[in-house]
Length: 309
Image 1: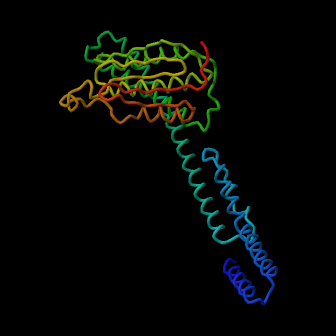
Image 2 (image 1 turned 60 degrees about the vertical axis):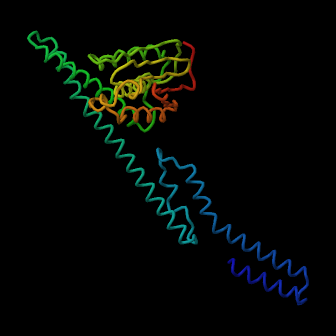
Image 3 (image 1 turned 135 degrees about the vertical axis):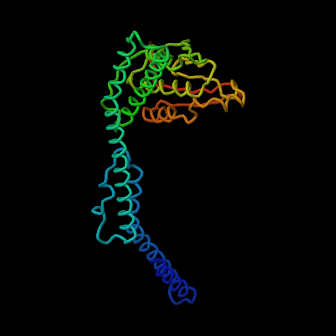
C-alpha cells in the first residue's frame, strides 16, 4: 500500500513538473492517495488497537479468556494479528492455570496442616501436666510449643494469601493497640531464654475498619522477622498515628565478626518478610523498610485510613 502510494505521488509530481497535468489535479491525486492509504492502515490497525486496549484492562487475578478469543477477529484480519491473538490466549491460559494451581496448593496444604497442628498443641498441653517430666523434657516441650506457634502463624498467613480476594474476611472496627498487645505476647514466647527484649511502645492509639485477622498476621510476621534477625538486643514495636513500626538492632551493631560466624540459629533469609510484603501489597497497606547504618533496621506499615480510637 505504501509503495503504491509513493509511486502514485511520484508520477503525479512528475506530471505536474512537466506541465502534463494542472497543479490542482496533482494535489487532488496526492490527497486522494494519502486518504486511501490512511483508511487502509486504519482498517488493518483496528484489531491491534483493540488488542492493546484489552491488554491494558486485563487483570491476571481475574482473567477473562474471551478477551483473547479469535472469535472477535474478522475473517479478513491479518495473519500476524491472528497469530498474536492466539499466542496471547495461550499465554493468558497458562497464567490462569498457574495461579489456580498455586491457590489450590496453598489452600489445601494449609488446611491439611491444621489437623496435625491441633494434635501437637493438645499433646504438648497434656505433656506439660506430666509431673515426672525432667528439666530437659520441659525445655524440649517449650521448643515444641514455640515451633507450633510459628507454624500456626505461617498457616494462617497462607490461608489468607490463598484467597482470590479479600471477600469472606470479616471486617470490623478494632483498636490496633489491642491486637498488637496480643501479638507481642505471642512473640515473647518465642524468645524465652534468649538475650532479646521485646517492647511495645504506644505513644498513640488508633483504630481501623478492616480485618483484625489480616492485621494481626501482618504485624506478627514483621515481629517474627525481627526476632529471627536479632541474636541479642532490644526490639521495639511502636504505634504512631496511622502507622506501626518494628525496630530491631542491626546485626553489625550488636555482634562481632567471630560471634556472627558462631551463631547459626538466626534465619537471615526473611521468609516472614516476604509474606508481610505480599499481605501489604494485597490489602494496600504500604510497607517501608529502612536501615540506619550500624544502628537499627526499621519496618513501618502505614494505614491510609486510620480512625480515632
